[in-house]
Image (cartoon, rainbow, N blue to C red; front, side):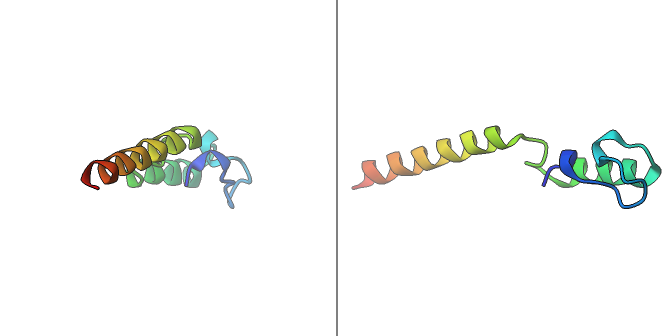
Length: 63
């Protein structure tokens, strides 16, 4: 999950803005915790398409 759409329960501001200490702490935690969390959805879809193509190519070569 990306933090750009999350709303802080403490200050009711977007977490990505980091207005309060809770926002800043959660933003840092999400950035460090998630390997693919920093990627936008289009990049994830492109990565998935590349992986599917690689698996299809591998299956075609072994058949």
